[in-house]
View 1 (cartoon, rainbow, N blue to C red):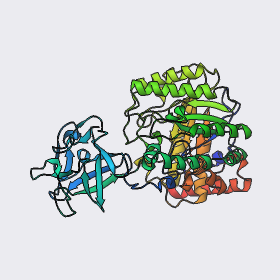
View 2 (cartoon, rainbow, N blue to C red; view 1 turned 45 degrees about the vertical axis):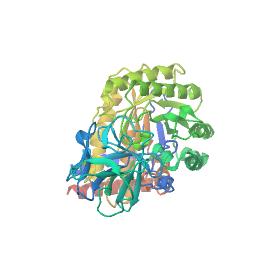
View 3 (cartoon, one colour; view 1 turned 30 degrees about the vertical axis):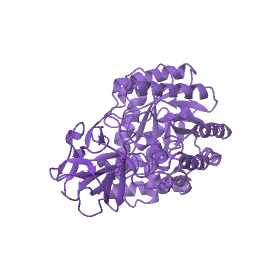
Length: 523
């Protein structure tokens, strides 16, 4: 078996750049995503958030509160909808609250069930029955290391009583000893760093300054020249729904992304690239992640109002760019959740989005993304979304699942052949849309991998995804994490893009290295 796998690897390396074009395409997409540019993702460029005051308490931060007097946790009974008690020894979902930031030190607390804490204007018990936060009654947090006081606008403080109730009637200065108005606050999750957190964290004026500089400098015409020089023919450009309301989008979002997208189309024309506009963030959030601009990790996109608003965004983008020579396709939605976005609602949206794009162009590709989570991509092939130039987008990562955590080099590469290749081939042969690997990365969970091992993993992916009938797009152009950074990978030769990037002696060396790695790891 070792010889067989070794032979397959050699054939892989020798067959680079052998793929034919998809029907209707002059050439398959060899693309790169412009992630973190017009839709903020803090992990891509963490420095964007460095200047936010009190930045460990952004929107969506999850906290737990423990009374120092009772040594019990504050709990929204049944996850919200009724009473609040202070009687839990161990904190879990009911004892975890999501922050909605009002200002640097003013917040609302959202419960597990979606309700908000309220004190009914102070003086009485705190409840968890409000379906929306009270704009006139934020909670002001006073902080001393991990200890906090929670003050109301009337000057009263939140306190616990001996019978484990939570009241809003403590008057005077409580001090920081073990009294009823002092709590230990534990931050259990603080990983949402998207457009909402940035804009609401800085405030409009400072956020506008930060984003203007970011949008002007993070991606440039020189980057497009670099991509073109290295054989890339397409950029996939994530945008947020607020782009349709530029230059004055709803708060807290910041205008200016439309002008940046226009510049990208100009650069694409200059450097002979094509553009895919990818609606990465929809109203209400389609997946609860920072890259869909979720405020607190919740998902409320699948409602009639949000779907209708999203269709308006597609109409805006199609009307503006459908006849632009650099436009290749419009992706209707990125990574909808398989858990909370029902298939029937998604297919209805995709079908209506397709019709909107077709009302402006008969040739622009309409791209529909697979649901993320436990969803079969075949569900979109069977949905009859449109009759021409429909593409299904799949995202392939050997990450984000415990299944990959302990895989070694050869196991990761074998996974590409045993799982990815057959799925791509099966979908290619289906009588339906084209297939697009719209996101993938030359990164894995292998510790201390060598450059040659990264090269082999990258070449395996290029070979597998190069067979996709529409092509592929790497995530992403630039990234603080170097192996996610396309430019770094190319400049440091961790990713070799076929015959244009690899010389024959290196190819032969990689063949021998591939064989050696596989044979040693199965011996």
